[in-house]
Image (spheres, each protein chain N blue to C red):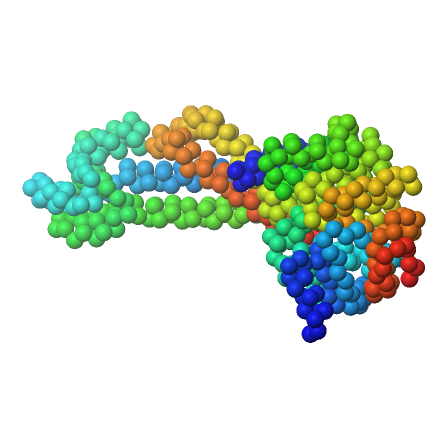
Length: 243
Length: 306
């Protein structure tokens, strides 16, 4: 171990990466190698794009990070904890520390904006007084303070995604995982969502965006991790790199 | 504090679940009510049957007849020996004349009585009727009394009571089989209701998992829903029995007065203090089993990310 390795080891103990994947492989039962020997690190406060065409392993990586599935081999650490060996209580804690936004918003249609956001706190048993404090605050950050009584069907796609974002952020997660957050949005709304994500990142939350939207990636000029057939193809700052 | 709020959340969501799956819930409650109604009927019949058998055993004593030509002193001595036994509650003497008068009154027409004139065909039938504290001890007493000098014959009720116990056992076995089958049907229906509830709330559960809700927090509303189905299913027959038990027994007593004048029905409170808690416990228990059986499987199928 040289001086550089020692320095890196010390840094990781003091301030571990938010995400650390070491030689992660995931094989499915049908023999498909979804992810192969993937190693990557995402540090606290980073804004990272994970890009790749379909079948590149992006979805599998999200499932692995959310501990929906476990890797066939390798280690995944989130906030310094090995999530592969977690029990169900640990998995709940892990998911509370990760805010997630999906392409299809996943809002509850029978509940209004306020209730959708408050739902995230209710199910994690946050006291009512805190919910009454947090929800209006987060709704004003995403610019929906005046629409708290509206139902999802009364909102535009961009607004629905902002509700989903508010729900993901209301519990102050360490990391925000956005899976194709602009997939169902027009360019104007996509840009608005990206600006919001940037704002969230500026406030200290690590943001990981999984996308194949080239324009957005090129415009944002952030760190881009490119996957191709489950293998890490490139990891650099800048625009979209075609695998 | 959190546990209390989770508890109330579970109760609220359980009721909401019932309302959401109205038709399935009603079907499950109706089936559960039908099962527990049958259970209640069987219980009432068995409990009363046992009560009546016991009452009959207590009321119908064994009869001790004496050797021909026995003296009054010897009869008195037999009576004293019997009274001293711990299992004997009372001993009543019936003279031959009393036996003949009673027989004439119950069994013979006036024309037939005339044919006997002043003869007493039961002149050797004076007897002691012995009532027991515990009918189970009858066999012991029969053995003892048969060994007494001057005792010719003993009529006991062992055979009758063994016969009744046999009927009781058959009735109980048949009841248990029918109830078990019906309860299995109820469990099956509750699991269908709960799995319908889970599939209706699939997206909500997926979001709950994603947000980091604990397994128990996700399960509680469905468990409560199952238990409420059981509780309501138990409440309906319990209410019917509570309000109509007296009417039912009065009606039967009036209709079959010849039978039910000899024996009486159990008191309503006596029946209800067992029937209502047992019915509620079975209902809630079945609801708990039914919902838990399906939950593990159904919840596993729901992923946070498709």
